[in-house]
Amino acid sequence: MKKQDALPIGDIISQFISEKNFGQKLDETQVMRLWPRIVGETVNSYTQSMYVHNRTLYVRLSSAVLRNELTMLRNELLTRINAEFEHRVIDNIIFR
Image 1: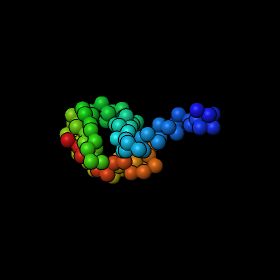
Image 2 (image 1 turned 30 degrees about the vertical axis):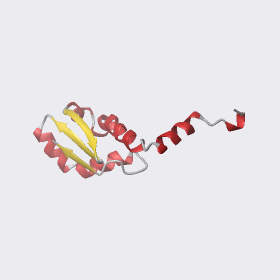
Image 3 (image 1 turned 180 degrees about the vertical axis):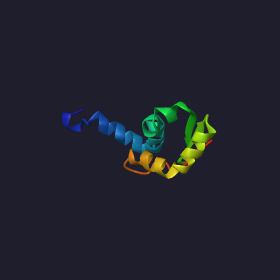
């Protein structure tokens, strides 16, 4: 391989991710990692589990009161989550 044929590893990884359509899944995983920063540690402490399916974030909370409050703040949370990315990752949030 000639030196001019070499590609930076970042370019190779980006190309692989786009060819295999892993981009959305990686973004969804990133949303779950960012959750504590987006909602704060107090809300995160009441979060029991979460997962993403069909661009919908499902969040199980241990407090019914908090669930009702976050339901009212759903649009603001969606805006915060999607602001972390250059494109829309999550379309809806369902609190359980």
